[in-house]
Image (cartoon, rainbow, N blue to C red; front, side, top):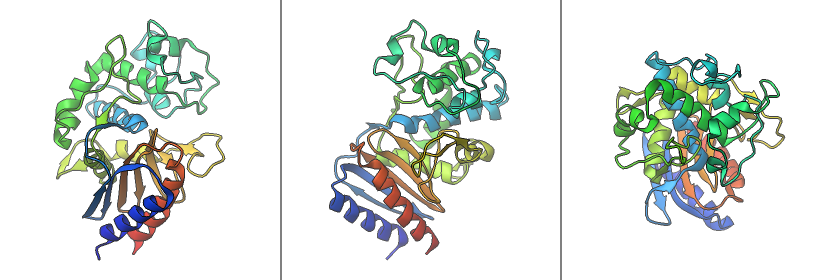
Length: 286
């Protein structure tokens, strides 16, 4: 049996045993692919997995010389902060801005409100407003971020109908707001596993992709898988790392294995991720 088929079968059985509410599963080990579906493969909100797309947008712009990830955001927006795009995308601006469902419409300008808040220094402070602000800053150099990405990332990955949800000011949400099919999300995972190359074409530099899971920021968390964060990537569980969206949208990387899941099971996602990390890692080494 192929390694990908074996890993898929192990995960399908585990999902049945624990009652995890999965919609789709895509397994890649090396060049082998195996899939399983519980529901039709329709576009679904990927939640915080979109933060990786935001990082790729900024990285492509940096590759083109349009921005520097390490220049102050004040070079792009009217603000006194010395935080950089890298700080905003790695959640290390130190600005506390709690999530709310009405975050995007509670202020006339969410980015301005975010940047006006005090910072505790270069420490981890997770907020969707941070990614949103980073992409608003990026738009000052590249124009509309969705349109900028369409020929550079979306079209090469085959995301023909993708549209990024927007705030009342017409800006892309950044940290959420993208709907992809499981198989499309898996293409994003393949691009990342292969360090910026997809279908033989380089879309983004290897250094940008590597930054998704290097240069870790200490989060102050204690649970395995939540102690360190990079540019959109979480370190762990175990030797794996992952992109993790609300309600169980997962891309888990373990060696040459990439496991992608679409789901609607927020409470069960951490345990499922831990199981994937153990068995994907074992499959990648076998």
